[in-house]
Length: 195
Image (cartoon, rainbow, N blue to C red; front, side):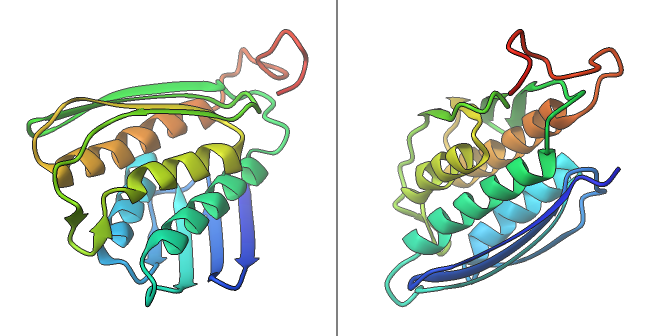
């Protein structure tokens, strides 16, 4: 059974198309117009072993805010759609991921109730062509678009590139675990009977 979703979202600020296969092999085709953001989404796709295509036309003449936030919304919606009824999935996922001097924790609950907590600070205003303030905007948008509980914490770190990249990778590994199947779970992992 393929867990695939395609989401299109067009506003006066952005035109976004995302195709996501949860049970992929890490194939990425990313074009947002922001080089560092493309790199992060490529890392997310490859390390989570998803297949994802992202095409974005955004108002980059203004800044990257709408492009990054709206892409997060659409990726979150694609995750939710691809998951379907969530029967048989582990629901929870976590990762403690090292990258050089940086250590990042990510924890996810695919509970259908959005909540986002991030504990990270950046010293540089930009990494490449990417505004570091947009890290929070992206993950907040993903968590609410996917209706997931998402926690991200930079435990240690100095280099902002490393911190941000480790956050994307830790998120992808936690999501891969949370979306994976456990043969012992025959319905949804909830006392309520639904997620």
